[in-house]
Image 1 (tube, rainbow, N blue to C red):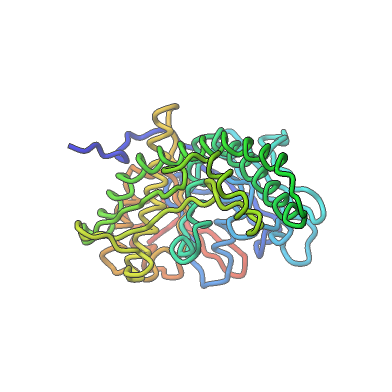
Image 2 (image 1 turned 90 degrees about the vertical axis):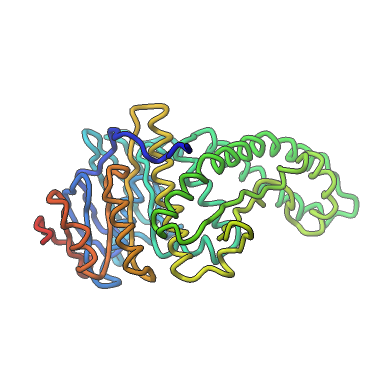
Length: 388
Protein backbone atom coordinates (compact mmCIF):
# COMPACT_ATOMS: atom_id res chain seq x y z
CA UNK A 1 0.00 0.00 0.00
CA UNK A 2 1.44 3.34 -1.08
CA UNK A 3 2.18 5.74 1.72
CA UNK A 4 0.11 8.93 1.57
CA UNK A 5 2.81 11.51 1.99
CA UNK A 6 0.47 14.36 2.77
CA UNK A 7 -1.51 12.63 5.52
CA UNK A 8 0.59 14.10 8.31
CA UNK A 9 -0.18 14.39 11.98
CA UNK A 10 -1.04 17.87 13.25
CA UNK A 11 2.11 19.90 13.90
CA UNK A 12 2.73 23.29 15.39
CA UNK A 13 2.63 26.07 12.83
CA UNK A 14 3.70 29.64 12.24
CA UNK A 15 0.43 31.59 12.27
CA UNK A 16 0.01 35.24 11.27
CA UNK A 17 -1.92 36.70 14.21
CA UNK A 18 -1.75 40.41 13.40
CA UNK A 19 -0.90 42.45 10.30
CA UNK A 20 -0.21 46.17 10.00
CA UNK A 21 0.03 47.90 6.64
CA UNK A 22 0.93 51.48 5.78
CA UNK A 23 0.90 52.79 2.20
CA UNK A 24 1.28 49.40 0.53
CA UNK A 25 -0.14 49.61 -2.98
CA UNK A 26 -3.73 50.90 -2.60
CA UNK A 27 -3.94 50.03 1.11
CA UNK A 28 -3.11 53.27 2.94
CA UNK A 29 -3.61 51.89 6.43
CA UNK A 30 -4.79 48.63 7.95
CA UNK A 31 -4.50 46.87 11.30
CA UNK A 32 -5.97 43.37 11.21
CA UNK A 33 -6.30 40.39 13.54
CA UNK A 34 -6.72 36.98 11.95
CA UNK A 35 -8.21 33.57 12.64
CA UNK A 36 -5.72 30.73 13.09
CA UNK A 37 -7.50 28.80 10.32
CA UNK A 38 -9.74 30.55 7.77
CA UNK A 39 -9.66 34.21 6.75
CA UNK A 40 -11.79 35.29 3.81
CA UNK A 41 -11.78 38.56 1.89
CA UNK A 42 -14.73 39.68 -0.22
CA UNK A 43 -14.66 42.53 -2.71
CA UNK A 44 -14.98 43.45 -6.35
CA UNK A 45 -11.97 43.20 -8.63
CA UNK A 46 -9.42 45.97 -8.23
CA UNK A 47 -10.37 46.87 -4.66
CA UNK A 48 -7.22 45.60 -2.91
CA UNK A 49 -7.82 41.95 -2.00
CA UNK A 50 -4.77 40.74 -3.91
CA UNK A 51 -2.66 43.60 -2.54
CA UNK A 52 -3.46 42.39 0.98
CA UNK A 53 -2.31 38.87 0.14
CA UNK A 54 0.80 40.32 -1.49
CA UNK A 55 1.67 42.12 1.76
CA UNK A 56 1.52 38.75 3.54
CA UNK A 57 3.62 37.19 0.78
CA UNK A 58 6.18 39.98 1.24
CA UNK A 59 6.72 38.99 4.88
CA UNK A 60 7.65 35.45 3.83
CA UNK A 61 9.76 36.08 0.73
CA UNK A 62 11.03 39.66 1.38
CA UNK A 63 9.62 40.73 -2.00
CA UNK A 64 6.32 41.20 -3.80
CA UNK A 65 4.78 38.32 -5.72
CA UNK A 66 3.90 40.64 -8.59
CA UNK A 67 6.37 43.54 -8.79
CA UNK A 68 10.13 43.41 -9.21
CA UNK A 69 10.47 47.07 -8.14
CA UNK A 70 10.01 47.79 -4.43
CA UNK A 71 9.12 51.43 -5.08
CA UNK A 72 6.15 50.37 -7.22
CA UNK A 73 4.58 48.90 -4.08
CA UNK A 74 4.42 52.30 -2.35
CA UNK A 75 1.03 54.01 -2.53
CA UNK A 76 0.98 56.67 -5.24
CA UNK A 77 1.94 60.06 -3.83
CA UNK A 78 3.61 58.63 -0.71
CA UNK A 79 7.33 58.32 0.05
CA UNK A 80 7.39 55.14 2.10
CA UNK A 81 5.52 51.93 2.91
CA UNK A 82 5.60 49.52 5.83
CA UNK A 83 4.29 46.00 6.38
CA UNK A 84 4.57 44.32 9.80
CA UNK A 85 3.35 40.92 10.88
CA UNK A 86 3.17 39.23 14.27
CA UNK A 87 3.56 35.43 14.27
CA UNK A 88 3.09 34.13 17.79
CA UNK A 89 5.73 35.91 19.86
CA UNK A 90 7.80 37.06 16.86
CA UNK A 91 7.43 40.19 14.76
CA UNK A 92 8.76 40.71 11.24
CA UNK A 93 8.65 43.99 9.35
CA UNK A 94 9.58 45.42 5.98
CA UNK A 95 10.14 49.10 5.31
CA UNK A 96 10.30 50.52 1.79
CA UNK A 97 11.37 54.09 0.96
CA UNK A 98 11.84 55.64 -2.44
CA UNK A 99 15.49 55.83 -3.47
CA UNK A 100 16.64 53.82 -0.44
CA UNK A 101 17.35 50.10 -0.07
CA UNK A 102 14.46 48.41 1.74
CA UNK A 103 14.93 47.21 5.30
CA UNK A 104 13.73 43.87 6.64
CA UNK A 105 13.70 43.11 10.34
CA UNK A 106 13.18 40.20 12.69
CA UNK A 107 12.10 41.89 15.87
CA UNK A 108 14.30 44.98 16.11
CA UNK A 109 17.25 43.46 14.27
CA UNK A 110 17.90 44.04 10.56
CA UNK A 111 18.86 41.08 8.41
CA UNK A 112 22.36 41.34 6.98
CA UNK A 113 21.26 39.11 4.09
CA UNK A 114 17.65 38.78 2.98
CA UNK A 115 18.42 35.23 1.88
CA UNK A 116 18.67 34.25 5.58
CA UNK A 117 14.93 34.89 6.02
CA UNK A 118 13.69 32.60 3.23
CA UNK A 119 12.04 29.47 4.61
CA UNK A 120 11.48 30.88 8.10
CA UNK A 121 7.80 31.60 7.40
CA UNK A 122 6.73 28.90 4.90
CA UNK A 123 4.06 30.13 2.51
CA UNK A 124 2.33 29.00 -0.67
CA UNK A 125 0.34 31.35 -2.90
CA UNK A 126 -2.24 30.30 -5.49
CA UNK A 127 -3.33 33.07 -7.88
CA UNK A 128 -4.57 33.64 -11.45
CA UNK A 129 -1.02 34.45 -12.57
CA UNK A 130 -0.15 30.78 -11.99
CA UNK A 131 -1.44 30.12 -15.51
CA UNK A 132 1.96 31.42 -16.64
CA UNK A 133 3.32 28.05 -15.50
CA UNK A 134 1.42 26.52 -18.42
CA UNK A 135 1.41 29.34 -20.95
CA UNK A 136 4.90 30.83 -20.61
CA UNK A 137 8.38 29.43 -21.14
CA UNK A 138 10.51 27.19 -18.96
CA UNK A 139 11.70 30.13 -16.82
CA UNK A 140 8.35 30.13 -15.02
CA UNK A 141 8.47 26.43 -14.26
CA UNK A 142 12.02 26.67 -12.94
CA UNK A 143 10.87 29.48 -10.65
CA UNK A 144 8.28 27.08 -9.24
CA UNK A 145 11.02 24.53 -8.50
CA UNK A 146 13.25 27.17 -6.96
CA UNK A 147 10.47 28.62 -4.79
CA UNK A 148 9.58 25.26 -3.24
CA UNK A 149 13.07 23.89 -2.73
CA UNK A 150 14.45 27.17 -1.37
CA UNK A 151 11.94 27.10 1.50
CA UNK A 152 13.35 23.79 2.72
CA UNK A 153 17.00 24.01 1.74
CA UNK A 154 19.12 27.12 2.35
CA UNK A 155 22.10 25.54 0.61
CA UNK A 156 19.98 25.26 -2.53
CA UNK A 157 19.26 28.97 -2.56
CA UNK A 158 22.93 29.78 -1.93
CA UNK A 159 24.03 27.51 -4.78
CA UNK A 160 21.37 28.94 -7.08
CA UNK A 161 22.47 32.50 -6.29
CA UNK A 162 26.10 31.57 -6.93
CA UNK A 163 25.25 29.79 -10.19
CA UNK A 164 23.20 32.71 -11.54
CA UNK A 165 25.92 35.22 -10.65
CA UNK A 166 28.64 33.23 -12.47
CA UNK A 167 26.31 32.55 -15.41
CA UNK A 168 25.74 36.29 -15.81
CA UNK A 169 29.51 36.86 -15.86
CA UNK A 170 30.05 34.07 -18.39
CA UNK A 171 27.38 35.45 -20.74
CA UNK A 172 28.89 38.93 -20.52
CA UNK A 173 32.33 37.50 -21.31
CA UNK A 174 30.98 35.60 -24.34
CA UNK A 175 29.76 38.88 -25.82
CA UNK A 176 33.20 40.42 -25.28
CA UNK A 177 35.05 37.46 -26.78
CA UNK A 178 32.82 37.52 -29.85
CA UNK A 179 34.35 40.86 -30.80
CA UNK A 180 37.94 39.57 -30.58
CA UNK A 181 39.75 38.12 -33.61
CA UNK A 182 41.61 35.59 -31.44
CA UNK A 183 39.57 35.15 -28.28
CA UNK A 184 41.32 34.02 -25.10
CA UNK A 185 39.20 31.30 -23.44
CA UNK A 186 41.21 31.09 -20.19
CA UNK A 187 38.77 33.22 -18.17
CA UNK A 188 35.84 31.36 -19.73
CA UNK A 189 37.33 28.09 -18.48
CA UNK A 190 37.48 29.52 -14.95
CA UNK A 191 33.79 30.43 -15.12
CA UNK A 192 33.02 26.92 -16.41
CA UNK A 193 34.69 25.39 -13.36
CA UNK A 194 32.81 27.73 -11.02
CA UNK A 195 29.47 26.69 -12.55
CA UNK A 196 29.89 22.93 -12.21
CA UNK A 197 29.69 22.45 -8.43
CA UNK A 198 26.55 24.56 -7.82
CA UNK A 199 24.95 23.04 -10.95
CA UNK A 200 25.49 19.54 -9.57
CA UNK A 201 23.91 20.48 -6.24
CA UNK A 202 20.90 22.13 -7.91
CA UNK A 203 20.37 19.19 -10.27
CA UNK A 204 20.48 16.68 -7.42
CA UNK A 205 18.09 18.75 -5.30
CA UNK A 206 15.60 19.17 -8.15
CA UNK A 207 15.72 15.45 -8.94
CA UNK A 208 15.03 14.51 -5.31
CA UNK A 209 12.23 17.03 -5.08
CA UNK A 210 10.37 15.67 -8.11
CA UNK A 211 10.68 12.10 -6.83
CA UNK A 212 9.14 13.09 -3.49
CA UNK A 213 6.66 15.64 -4.82
CA UNK A 214 5.10 13.66 -7.68
CA UNK A 215 3.03 11.16 -5.62
CA UNK A 216 1.72 14.02 -3.43
CA UNK A 217 0.75 16.03 -6.50
CA UNK A 218 -0.95 13.10 -8.21
CA UNK A 219 -2.94 12.29 -5.09
CA UNK A 220 -4.13 15.89 -4.68
CA UNK A 221 -5.09 16.10 -8.35
CA UNK A 222 -7.14 12.92 -8.05
CA UNK A 223 -8.88 14.30 -4.96
CA UNK A 224 -9.88 17.52 -6.75
CA UNK A 225 -10.83 15.95 -10.10
CA UNK A 226 -12.72 13.02 -8.61
CA UNK A 227 -10.28 10.60 -10.29
CA UNK A 228 -11.47 11.75 -13.72
CA UNK A 229 -7.94 12.20 -15.12
CA UNK A 230 -4.38 11.21 -14.35
CA UNK A 231 -1.42 13.57 -14.48
CA UNK A 232 2.36 13.49 -14.69
CA UNK A 233 5.12 15.99 -14.04
CA UNK A 234 8.48 15.20 -15.63
CA UNK A 235 11.81 16.84 -14.82
CA UNK A 236 13.98 17.30 -17.91
CA UNK A 237 17.63 18.35 -17.53
CA UNK A 238 20.69 18.31 -19.78
CA UNK A 239 22.60 16.93 -16.79
CA UNK A 240 20.62 13.69 -16.96
CA UNK A 241 22.65 12.51 -19.97
CA UNK A 242 25.87 14.54 -20.16
CA UNK A 243 28.92 15.70 -18.26
CA UNK A 244 28.59 19.45 -17.85
CA UNK A 245 32.31 20.23 -18.07
CA UNK A 246 32.54 18.37 -21.37
CA UNK A 247 29.35 20.05 -22.61
CA UNK A 248 30.84 23.48 -21.92
CA UNK A 249 33.96 22.59 -23.93
CA UNK A 250 31.99 21.04 -26.79
CA UNK A 251 29.62 24.01 -27.24
CA UNK A 252 32.12 26.82 -26.64
CA UNK A 253 32.21 28.01 -30.26
CA UNK A 254 28.42 27.86 -30.54
CA UNK A 255 28.03 29.83 -27.30
CA UNK A 256 30.42 32.41 -28.70
CA UNK A 257 28.18 32.88 -31.75
CA UNK A 258 24.99 32.89 -29.68
CA UNK A 259 26.37 35.25 -27.05
CA UNK A 260 24.94 33.17 -24.20
CA UNK A 261 25.47 29.84 -22.41
CA UNK A 262 23.53 27.00 -24.01
CA UNK A 263 24.37 24.28 -21.46
CA UNK A 264 23.49 24.03 -17.78
CA UNK A 265 20.70 23.78 -15.24
CA UNK A 266 19.30 27.16 -16.36
CA UNK A 267 17.88 25.19 -19.32
CA UNK A 268 16.00 22.68 -17.13
CA UNK A 269 12.32 22.08 -17.86
CA UNK A 270 9.20 20.62 -16.27
CA UNK A 271 6.84 18.80 -18.63
CA UNK A 272 3.20 19.06 -17.51
CA UNK A 273 1.20 16.12 -18.83
CA UNK A 274 -2.27 14.58 -18.75
CA UNK A 275 -2.31 10.82 -19.30
CA UNK A 276 -4.93 8.20 -20.13
CA UNK A 277 -2.69 5.48 -18.71
CA UNK A 278 -1.21 4.58 -22.09
CA UNK A 279 -0.37 7.89 -23.72
CA UNK A 280 0.79 11.23 -22.31
CA UNK A 281 -0.49 14.54 -23.66
CA UNK A 282 0.87 18.07 -23.06
CA UNK A 283 -1.41 19.94 -20.69
CA UNK A 284 -1.01 23.18 -22.65
CA UNK A 285 -2.22 21.61 -25.89
CA UNK A 286 -5.01 19.25 -24.82
CA UNK A 287 -6.09 20.41 -21.36
CA UNK A 288 -9.34 22.35 -20.98
CA UNK A 289 -9.34 25.55 -18.93
CA UNK A 290 -10.82 23.59 -16.03
CA UNK A 291 -8.20 20.87 -16.31
CA UNK A 292 -5.37 23.40 -16.50
CA UNK A 293 -6.67 25.24 -13.45
CA UNK A 294 -7.10 21.94 -11.56
CA UNK A 295 -3.53 20.95 -12.49
CA UNK A 296 -2.11 24.25 -11.21
CA UNK A 297 -4.20 24.19 -8.04
CA UNK A 298 -3.08 20.63 -7.34
CA UNK A 299 0.57 21.64 -7.83
CA UNK A 300 0.28 24.50 -5.34
CA UNK A 301 -1.75 22.60 -2.72
CA UNK A 302 0.66 19.68 -3.06
CA UNK A 303 3.48 22.17 -2.52
CA UNK A 304 1.96 23.13 0.83
CA UNK A 305 1.51 19.49 1.83
CA UNK A 306 5.02 18.61 0.70
CA UNK A 307 6.52 21.41 2.78
CA UNK A 308 4.50 20.31 5.80
CA UNK A 309 5.73 16.74 5.42
CA UNK A 310 9.33 17.87 4.94
CA UNK A 311 9.23 20.12 8.02
CA UNK A 312 7.81 17.29 10.12
CA UNK A 313 10.84 15.15 9.36
CA UNK A 314 13.44 17.61 10.68
CA UNK A 315 11.66 19.72 13.33
CA UNK A 316 8.35 19.78 15.11
CA UNK A 317 6.90 20.67 11.73
CA UNK A 318 5.04 23.67 10.42
CA UNK A 319 2.10 24.20 8.13
CA UNK A 320 2.85 26.72 5.41
CA UNK A 321 0.49 29.67 5.30
CA UNK A 322 -1.79 29.24 2.28
CA UNK A 323 -2.91 32.22 0.17
CA UNK A 324 -5.75 31.45 -2.26
CA UNK A 325 -6.53 34.33 -4.61
CA UNK A 326 -9.64 34.04 -6.80
CA UNK A 327 -9.31 30.27 -7.24
CA UNK A 328 -12.91 29.31 -8.16
CA UNK A 329 -13.12 30.80 -11.66
CA UNK A 330 -13.38 28.24 -14.51
CA UNK A 331 -14.05 25.35 -12.11
CA UNK A 332 -17.27 23.34 -11.98
CA UNK A 333 -19.21 23.15 -8.72
CA UNK A 334 -18.02 19.61 -7.96
CA UNK A 335 -14.36 20.60 -8.13
CA UNK A 336 -15.02 23.70 -6.03
CA UNK A 337 -16.66 21.52 -3.38
CA UNK A 338 -13.71 19.09 -3.35
CA UNK A 339 -11.20 21.95 -3.02
CA UNK A 340 -13.17 23.42 -0.11
CA UNK A 341 -13.30 20.04 1.61
CA UNK A 342 -9.56 19.53 1.12
CA UNK A 343 -8.35 22.89 2.41
CA UNK A 344 -10.69 22.73 5.42
CA UNK A 345 -9.11 19.48 6.57
CA UNK A 346 -6.41 19.27 9.23
CA UNK A 347 -3.83 18.74 6.48
CA UNK A 348 -3.62 22.49 6.02
CA UNK A 349 -2.90 25.30 8.44
CA UNK A 350 -3.82 28.99 8.26
CA UNK A 351 -5.59 30.03 5.06
CA UNK A 352 -6.26 33.41 3.46
CA UNK A 353 -8.75 33.32 0.60
CA UNK A 354 -10.24 35.98 -1.68
CA UNK A 355 -13.32 35.96 -3.88
CA UNK A 356 -15.84 38.31 -5.47
CA UNK A 357 -18.73 35.93 -4.73
CA UNK A 358 -20.10 35.97 -1.19
CA UNK A 359 -21.86 32.65 -1.76
CA UNK A 360 -18.59 30.75 -2.27
CA UNK A 361 -17.14 32.07 0.97
CA UNK A 362 -20.33 31.54 2.94
CA UNK A 363 -20.13 27.87 1.94
CA UNK A 364 -16.52 27.69 3.09
CA UNK A 365 -17.10 29.46 6.38
CA UNK A 366 -20.27 27.68 7.44
CA UNK A 367 -18.63 24.77 9.33
CA UNK A 368 -16.04 26.94 11.09
CA UNK A 369 -17.23 29.36 13.77
CA UNK A 370 -13.69 30.63 14.33
CA UNK A 371 -13.35 31.81 10.72
CA UNK A 372 -13.25 35.51 9.94
CA UNK A 373 -14.59 37.41 6.98
CA UNK A 374 -13.32 40.77 5.74
CA UNK A 375 -14.74 43.23 3.22
CA UNK A 376 -12.38 45.12 0.93
CA UNK A 377 -13.41 48.29 -0.89
CA UNK A 378 -11.01 50.82 -2.44
CA UNK A 379 -8.17 49.67 -0.18
CA UNK A 380 -10.22 49.91 3.01
CA UNK A 381 -10.65 46.64 4.91
CA UNK A 382 -13.47 46.08 7.40
CA UNK A 383 -14.05 43.03 9.56
CA UNK A 384 -17.03 40.84 10.36
CA UNK A 385 -16.65 37.94 12.80
CA UNK A 386 -20.03 36.50 11.86
CA UNK A 387 -19.72 34.41 8.67
CA UNK A 388 -23.44 33.66 8.38
